[in-house]
Image (cartoon, rainbow, N blue to C red; front, top):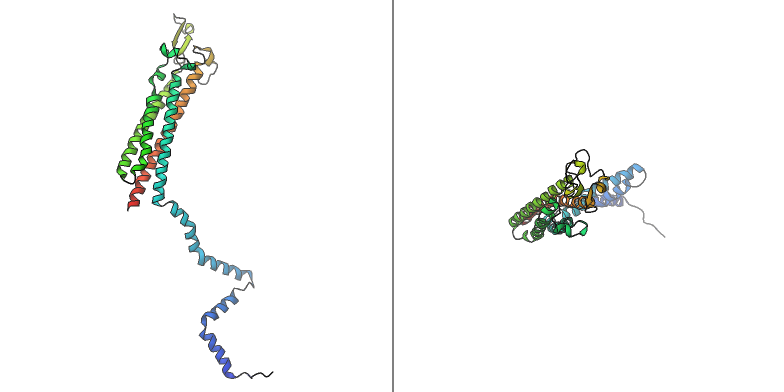
Length: 273
């Protein structure tokens, strides 16, 4: 086997090829620089790759957040929230009406209502027409608010303000009445001989003028003062406490409805632009 001797021109041709292919030479030089000879060299290579891929990866991570905060999605969530708020307000209104009806029939006995021996707070019926009927009407308007947002945003705002104001008024009336009723105590028959009265028995509010003791904390008074109806204190405290909690829940739902309506109106205008 014979080999051709190397000539001087071949060296010059190889040098010329390296000069004619700068990309390949750069790749070869980069390969030599990034060999894992030392840990520092590998670290510099990793940092360089992260720096090159950083903006792309950041935009990919923020892309779901931008989709979630897009105006059409916010408007759709606002409509769903309006329907949920309307359903919640309607349920709370029915519960308030049921609690007030129960107060009209102590121990589920109709005779006290027929004889007119029911307390003025229960007869006022703030849970029926305040926290009940007014809030139920507001819940119906709130549920209808979502259908106005595409066609008439201004009508949606007026409906939201009307429903919120109606529910707010009814919830406040129920809240105040329940608080006063819990403060005054139940309407029941009690022994008035200890109060220096001529009559021995009468119906009234025995805890209203009892300033030195609070019947809400002193449970010994619950069975010793009210003689009729039986468990009048428990019935009074239980259902008026339920009315008080329902009215607080209604006030919270009204506040959420106002924020949701304003957010939906803003996003509707931005979506049209």
